[in-house]
Length: 230
Image (cartoon, rainbow, N blue to C red):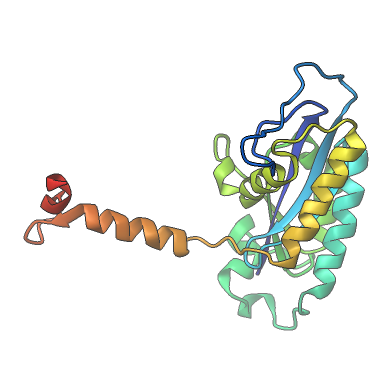
């Protein structure tokens, strides 16, 4: 099963952005204390955590009229790259069956091919969009309230925005869009996969094991005496 995450980053204003910049040592760039409100920009994002690939588009407005056609076009391209489903529904893995997610078989629908994780934006519940997704074998999964960390697109967007806008002072929304899209192109040249229990998780587990030691297999732990001595 292919899993993609979708989100809309922004809006970002034409104001000085906090962050570091490449400047000569001791000659930090001074940001102006005033600015003009020339509009805002957003970044429509589709993220594939397994490979780290990103599909994104900068817009000045993320209304249904802008978001839905973009989603249709991008998802059709993604589905065209996936292998065709040739096995019967009952022979597929449980997570690749509609019955697992819907509680009942759906023989009249296209085979389930892609899971789309997104937030609870009101426009995501538009009947035309939901029907289109189901007819194309796409299962939309909305993250629960206060569960943004479950959508990997949220984490990726913070990285992209920090790289594109950190320490800068954009003057127009078009400039913001250009910087964001250029950053996406740079990211896709060497994408980083986002996986659960990856290298970062393993580092945290090793660090915790160094800080704590089990007591005679009882399940209780204590701080390492070596660390206490330090």
